[in-house]
Length: 254
Length: 117
Image 1 (cartoon, each protein chain N blue to C red):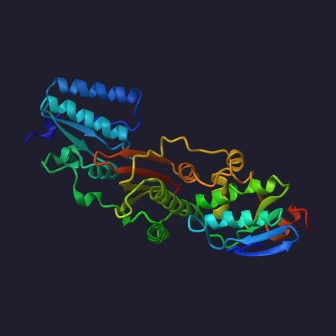
Image 2: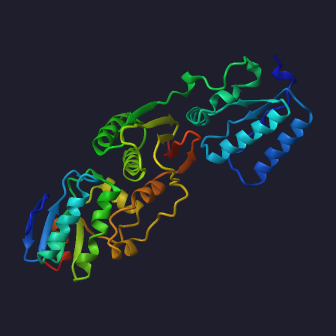
Image 3: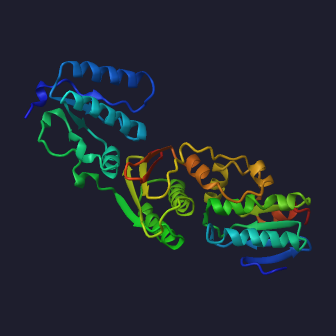
């Protein structure tokens, strides 16, 4: 079993992708692999909001390491990252360690117990079930130390996303939608997983102009714009198993 | 006036008042569109929407109002919102609709906005 102390320093995985930080990451991975280490540590502490591009980056890095018979371990994986990897059935392919001083135990990266959400639920994507699930979530929100308007927004986001999945997802009404909410200081991260057709609400051009919508007598299509305007961050991943994973972060001032 | 499934009353000759109750969402947005369409067809130029009891307004509820308002405006009328609770006003603010909709603090001022005393 290799010792952590003999390894290269952990390479931070950048939260912001597509620019200098990502180039720097790639360069550090390349330089590290040149030394043919037994293990590469990727520090994931910055990944508070995980997008499909982060997952692709981790996957790409894993493949590169695999070619050189190098193991990849995730250090300080956030609960959001662990949740997404679990949902995508990628959890078993990565190993993790909370910090270098803990050494490697060889245990799987994802400890199922540590991925437990503060709140989780499943509901069938039909109107009555959505209302019931909305009420259950509302009861959870009542104890949340957040401003009343924030709780109202969270409830609205839940209802709108659930309704959108139900009405537009082309979903089998017998297969439940899974929902998790994790609470952190001044923030809630909500995750929806459904088996409907692929739809990325973060990419769709769905915003509207009131005057135009009124002229068109438009009565639908305001849900996603509402959610996008209320959320602080959203990410979408289409899982390899064909599930849509939508993550929404809402923050508030403490 | 054709059947309206919401609490309602005729205020004055061409002013109709609707109270949608606690929720305006997927469950009743279509009925709201129908109620507004009927009111316009029955000759009401103005609808005052008393939102005092409204606790939840979904996007479908917003759509029922937004998609119907021009029915009235095209005939020199309007849908006027009054007694808007703060969470509902927040929804309208988030959607940049507070300037678009005619909003008054109470029923009396809504009636004034209809050109009525």
